[in-house]
Amino acid sequence: MPMHLFKDTTINFFDVWNGATSELEDKLAGIPNDEGRSAVVQDFLLRQLTLEKQDLQVAYCLGKAQLTRGSIAVRKLAEETGLSQRQLSRRFHQSIGLSPKEYLGVCRFNSSLQYLANYPDMSLTEIAHLSGYYDQAHFIRDYKVYTGHSPGEVVAASHILF
Image (cartoon, rainbow, N blue to C red; front, side, top):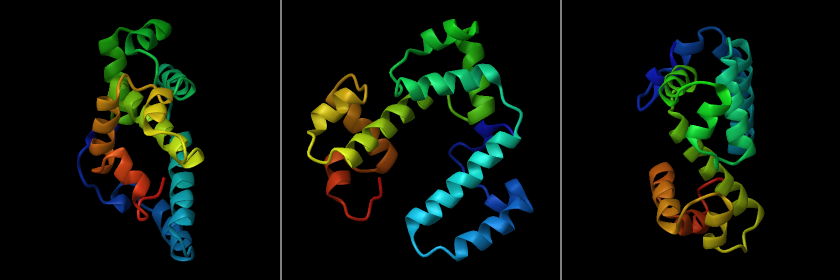
């Protein structure tokens, strides 16, 4: 199934992977904490990705996005793969369900979460800068979009895992 069909919708997990999910369900039932369950689900999803036919140009872009923590222009990714920006966007939507720009934003956000977790005494302004955000407003906007909270609220909340 094209990944863009999964965006902004709710789909029954069992309808997507049929028989493979019963094993996952059994594993999850025996794990007592959220961190352990999250690790098992991530491992399952990564194994599913390796079973799918990969688009090598998109895979290259994903690696480059991770390496640069989302601080690379879509135009540059398109140039490096020899695709037009429009074709690259179509391929991203098909493979991962997001546009290249959206994926780069997720990479920046994830990078900022890593800084929050690893350097709790670092200022939010410095974390925003190191994570590749253009300014504080973009940093705050992404946090509100992805978590529903400001960065300060995320840091202060005991119920949010990062």
